[in-house]
Amino acid sequence: MIYRRGLCSIDYRQTDPSGDIQNCETFPTCLKSVEITFNEGIFQADTFEIDDLGTLELDKEPAQFGFSEFCDIPPAPSPEFVIPDTLCVGDSVRTSGANNALAHRVRWRLIGGVDSVQFDSTIFGYRFQNPGEYTLQQTVWFLGCGYSSERTITVLEPLEARIRPEGVVCEPPPLNLTVSSNRPLTDYIWSTGQRNPELSVSQSGIYSVAVSDGYCLDADTVSISFLLKAQIYLPNTFSPNGDGINDVFFPQGTDFVPVRLWVYDRWGGLAALEEGPEARWDGGNAQQGTCRFGTKTGKKEKREGLYERINSHNFITPPDISPPSNTAPPAARSSFWRSASAGPSPL
Image 1 (cartoon, rainbow, N blue to C red):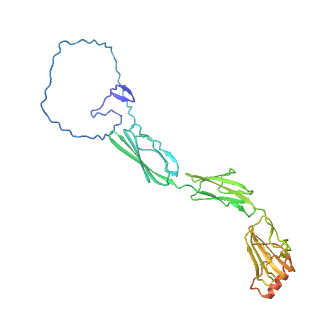
Image 2 (cartoon, rainbow, N blue to C red):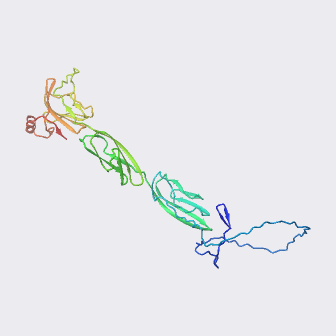
Image 3 (tube, rainbow, N blue to C red):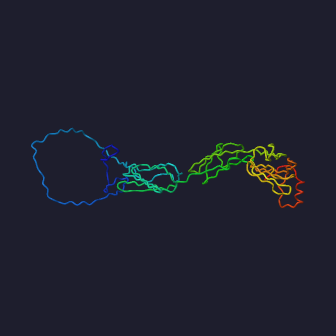
């Protein structure tokens, strides 16, 4: 009699002298034997007589039996299984491809930073919270014998990707956006739909990218602002006489932030140096005469010029040359002032 998932049936099979069935797989057994010692002794049994036996009638019907050669033994359980060999930290995973449903017992064991054991489950599931190397082992028992198989799993650090450059851009468009990351990337998809490693942009706006290294995902978003060419105006007069009107000299205009303002006297000596967004000059103790000034802005542009102090007013003419050196000889400085002309000079 063979028990089949709740179905009880009777099979007659012809075996060879060894007890095997032809063309049917045989399986080893690992049975544990225990030696038992019997102590013989004398025992007594009670006897009794039955006076009358009852009669029981049986109905019988003829039955026919047929025989055929077949073998429907299912494959033996196996410890082999399938699981990804590389994951990203935070991923959840489950095993597949396991043939352990008919095993008499199943044990899963995860080793590496953790030691997790799970019994009698046909699958194993786990969420990897920490990066590192792990080993997953499955052991199945069948007819008393144990069989094991294991797989190595690598859990990667999170993928970190950043778009470069970002923020305010002083150079004129177009601008190439690239992605830097802590591992080589295999896939890109920009907010514009492009899938190239670089994105050329010509307008201010917000741009994002999603990337992958084949295992992990990450995304980044940046805001790009193209600045127009700075319009810098330097007044040609100012009157530091304390009347509250045009008492200070400072660069004016749009699309720039002052970084440094310097003023030299006619002999090349530094008369004033002001720094920061509020850089400006109140004339200080400068004497009447011609002086040179310069201003540097956050737009990487520079304006320079001359001013001449006449009573409490200053007349300014921008030249296209650098501030004079303090070590220049007097003759060179005199020639310098006579040859000044208007125009901006790049940094």
